[in-house]
Every structure is written in C-alpha cells, then in structure tokens.
Image 1 (cartoon, rainbow, N blue to C red):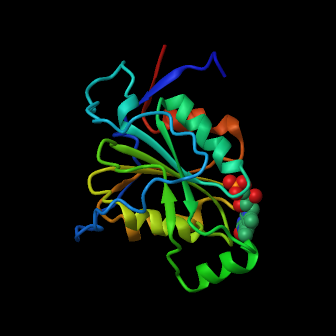
Image 2: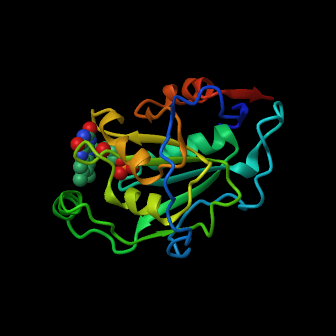
Length: 211
Ligand SMILES: Cc1cc2nc3c(=O)[nH]c(=O)nc-3n(C[C@H](O)[C@H](O)[C@H](O)COP(=O)(O)O)c2cc1C
C-alpha cells in the first residue's frame, strides 16, 4: 500500500459519543508488561504533543492502534488503520493462550472474567487517540478487551473502537467502552469487515488527508 495517503487524525468534531461519567478512572498501572509475541509495534510512545491545532501535519506520535486478534482478521484491519493514520500498533494477547476458545471464551464472557493479558506497550501516556480492535465473540468483545480497558487510564483520551466479525455489527459490543473507560471520549466504531470502509470512516472521524 505504498501509494496510500498518510492521514492525520484530529478527532474532535466528528466524535459521536461522549462519555459523560465523571467518576474516578482506572488505576493507571500500565498493565502486564511487554513481552508480547511477535508484534508489529512500529514506534515509540513518545510524547504525543500533536494537539488539535496542527492540521496539515502528521500526528504520528499520538495515535495508537491496539488490537486483539485470534485468527488474523482484526490484525489486518489494525495494520491498515495504523498505515492510514501513521499510528503505532500494539498487539493485545491473552497471557495464557486458549486451549479451546469456544469453551474458554464463552466461560469468560459468562463469568465477566478478566483474563490476564500482555501488551507490547508500556504506557498510553503519549497517545491522545487510541483505536481498540477485536473480533466479535458471541456478539460481544472478547474479555481480554475488558482487561485492556481496565489496565490503563483513558481519562481525557479518545477511544475509537473497531471490530471484525462473521456477520454481527460492532453495536452490541460497544457498551464496555463507556462502562470501563468512563472518562474517555468514545468515537464512532466500525465493523471493519470490508477494507473499503476504513478510509471513509477515518474521514468521518475528522481525519484530514495529508500528502
Ligand atoms: C469464539 C468465537 C466466537 C465468535 N462469535 C461471533 C459472533 O457472535 N458473531 C459474529 O459475527 N462472528 C463471530 N465470530 C467470528 C469472528 O468474529 C470473525 O471471524 C472475526 O473476523 C475473527 O477475527 P480475528 O481473525 O481477528 O480473530 C466468532 C469467532 C470465534 C472464534
């Protein structure tokens, strides 16, 4: 995708839903360390000081695309989003791989579990906008996403959910973001089953295309 435009994401006006809850946010203990296997982290999490005024320039430092992917579909979408936005990628993994995802994944959902995760990311401090991607499982986000949302302090940040699925849309899964990251702004989510939907969605979010 060499010829693709780089895009600066300046999410502000097009944010669709704002989390209004004002209670204390999650403990900011960034997670579980960064062992993660095989991830494609593309860069540093250095200070994201691209604020909402620097239109026309890339905002690479302040966009993170974090994702969990079991069979690779969501990873592909995440890679495209990172490429289009200049964002950094961070893969979310379950610390203990599933032996039987159908049974264990459903048990986790039914028990509202928080499976341990590992993420190749020390901190989200340098990011203003965090895309969070996952496959739809039983019409919900896998519980590792709940663990992820509770592992960092998203106060004042914008979360942009996306998913892939066989058929279900992202809609039913979105409740976790306002529940678990109540002090974040939650932007329009995307069911990213068709690559062609990604760029228009980024533009709807207030993306400015940059040469
Ligand atoms: C355990 C499990 C549960 C799933 N549940 C659903 C579902 O409820 N609705 C749906 O549309 N797709 C469902 N799928 C299909 C995945 O959401 C779809 O294949 C997705 O693109 C996989 O993403 P990944 O390759 O990033 O893991 C399920 C897949 C698995 C493995």
